[in-house]
Image 1: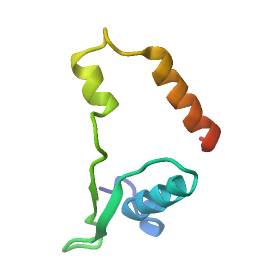
Image 2: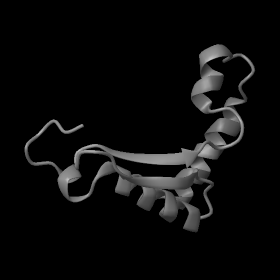
Image 3: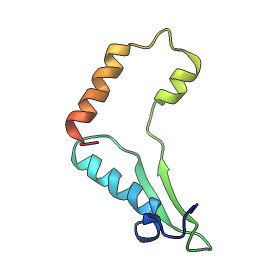
Image 4: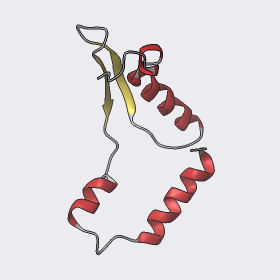
Length: 88
């Protein structure tokens, strides 16, 4: 999906970014989805990444049905750990 005539996605497509970022995060000890395939569909502008979903529930899933039982301190600690390993 391209909104502008000139976009960084032309030079560094989002599927390639996703794969590169996953590899960098793995090197830093952060669990990421296993990349199965990535590439181009019928058109150069249609690209994809197929990956295995990580085990367990996503934060989005948990927040959608139950916010009472969330251990907010553990969640904050998890995000702090990510920030220590990765520069955002």
